[in-house]
Figure (spheres, rainbow, N blue to C red):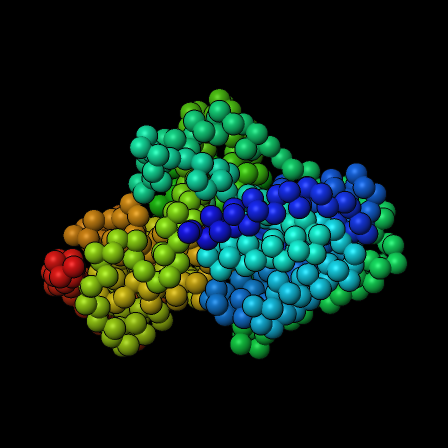
Length: 518
Ligand code: FAD
């Protein structure tokens, strides 16, 4: 059974028992990747329950260093999340609600520890939003049963996608594996069920939470990142200035983007030198913003109040946010993509090069292809990379260098502030031609043409490759091939590590051979 079905069975088996549970001393919300008070379904449900019964609402966050490792969380992402916990804790405290934070070293001990805490607090109800990764769904299924055995009702609800996974199927009742027809059913589904975009209010102030047992929970400490996942000092100040933490910042960013940039999003979204995208992926990944709010906010400013009509920039932006839903739906339906397997099994036999030297050049931005190198340096500098460039560098890794896409997928997760398993896996699957709705294997981005098309004046390249700042005109896209070799050499910029046309042919032949073997 798929992990989501395992959880559904646990919910179904315990439905009767959960209904019987009477509210005792407290109701608990367990925060995971939903670090906000506004528009948070499970938190809202917990708050309603606590209010109706007149008992304290306790919020809880479990820090799990093993989870950080298992999910390849980047230090920048962990730092953002820990800083956000401070904001969340202060916001909740103003409402009279404690945020209890505890570190549990071994991830397999999380369910047991949660149950212990619930019993200690006399809590009868636990609410949480669903996470769609395999381990998380299985863990929640276990916890639902453990809770039911102790007369605790655990409710795990859909929240992270606008449309819950499984809600959209093809005419034949199957999960879509191609985005366009999926999106053509996503839009009418949301129009027909407008409540999918309804806002969940933040919890009401809860004066009960100062009661004895719960009062001490206000004092728990938010830990520092584990040693192995700490931000290097040289990056900390810059990264923190780039990504102020918390949900208020998320909302400010969304409002500013919609007020100033969304109308031209369709025209500028592919140009990395112009900051034409929203840069809210950090917030969607940490859950400081809900996808519902993002889409609702844009829709409400559209002339037609529709998702796919009206202002072009708004339409296109909503369709991009929908990609996030799409990849989560894919992950839930085909959970093996979570297990290092290509979506298309026939692509399992490609003979990758595994050249350590090429991987090093790619990851440090020293391939000799300025657009690729500037993009990789942008990621080092910001913990974020423009979407067009993610496609360019991913294609370059898998096709030009014939390096296993999983090496790139991992490297991205380990470095991105917005690292999200489903979207990252989907993006790599697309670029390496092994995923759902992929780029065909014989379509290989030409990095120089991409550079000329999307950074025509080389502004982006010059920003991130200071050594090439003096290179004039079109030579910026290929300094050694266009008469600026002496300057590039003097500046220490490398020659191209592979020649694109030959590398392209090799990639096509290798892919063809791999697929044939299957
Ligand atoms: P905007 O263009 O303003 O889009 C708004 C939001 O829509 C984004 O924040 C994001 O949540 C969603 N979105 C947009 N494009 C996509 C897409 N192609 N796939 C999924 N969601 C999308 N996105 C992540 O959030 N985390 C990742 O780890 C990630 N890894 C990627 C790896 C590769 C190889 C590729 C090609 C794409 C990846 N993306 C990932 C998708 C996309 O690049 C980022 O979401 C986007 O660049 C974030 O910037 P933004 O918020 O300014 O986006």
